Length: 408
Image (cartoon, rainbow, N blue to C red):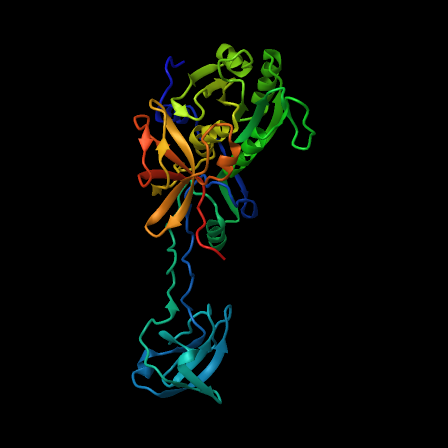
């Protein structure tokens, strides 16, 4: 175990070295949304599989429309899913709808807004060029092309493309199963009436939401008291059913911190304490082959610790090919003081300004101020050698979600 607190980057490197992607499973396409591809997807066909019209209009030969106005005879009308029974010849055309296969003989489509139709004839008002308004075979995807690489998130667009490729079953990485364990005899349920000294449990709900956002599955969530016996039993049960254990509280150096004591005595502890604010007393261990992230009890420390260490691990276990958040430069809207010797993650709200993003610190940075995390959409990472930043300083902001701009 480390004697001195590690830097966040060093601690994260250790976490990622100790986690590996889970095994895979093949599931129906209908169930694949939100999952992670476990293999490359190679297109078995050209898309589109045939040349088709990009417009409602008329399939013609461009050579017939080198001078206008020009009148051509309509042979027939075809819609999407229909095949023409005639070939386009000199002096003729076929009325065609968007998506319909281009008939033989035609080499372009003229949109109907450039024509006047009357009594099975159509007058063309504009010249045409070969290939216009035709989507060629394989214009989107070629047969044999790698469309998606392993590690791709199956979002709505990917899900739709898999359907176009005929992927009725999809190989994905198994979702990480997560057990949540929150300590503290002062904690009560969300609907409970508070008695003196009690607070409602918010950390387990924060962790549930964060786990879900990573595409992982919560298989167990429990609270336990502050005795080693209770914690040992809870950890044993959690390890028996989960791929990852996340705990909250009981990890500092106080008299009622049993998580730390149990893990130090029974687990392989990779590190304890990270030189960061908030969340310094964070412990990472392996217990019975299961990674354990022992996060502090303060709610902001829980969420920042999850963001910096648990989230990358869960994404890697889920088979994701990338884990880093998008970072942007923002202009600080107030002066900021930070403790030297520790990397500080400052909760902030990014707003759109005329010259780029503006970073508004979301309030007091005490780690118990959950409201400031709820108002934040970014973390400002302040280096350990920086103790003061003036208003107007440019800072790097890590996006916790895509910030909406503008109004309705």
